[in-house]
Image (tube, rainbow, N blue to C red; front, side):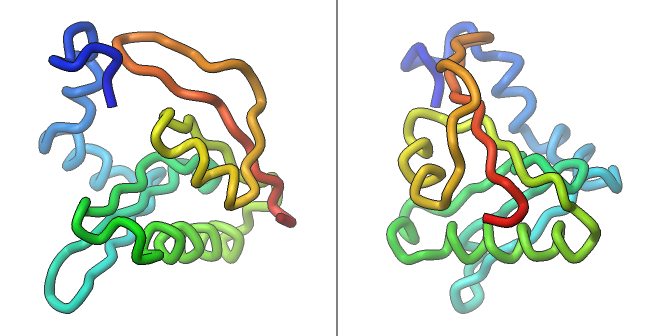
Amino acid sequence: MTLDADGAGAEKFMDSMAEPAIAAYLSQPRYQYLLGFIGSALAGAVAVRDGAHLFHLFVAREFHGCGLGRQLWLAARNAALAAGNTAGFTVNASDYAFPMYQRWGFMPTGPRVEEGGIAWVPMRLPACA
């Protein structure tokens, strides 16, 4: 997740993932969150910012490989399209998630970026994909 194993240099990113930051995102209409449950267990969450940017996609480790991430993404994508998105979607893909986003049709739009203790590849998916 961070460039340095102990998170050094990624403090701003880590703060953006802390409970107060998530609560702030939830209070803003520009962020649309959906939750995924398996039984009664919260297994994952997805967020789209401004109807077009895949902002968060998390699946609990014990549910990796079950297709929940794809289900969450498709639900969020369909909601954004129904709300009027015609421009497509963007995501800043971590090294870990990059292959998954490629499988879903996202294409890189620039080189890998290392900034603030984290790395990502900017990607885009057309609305019609």
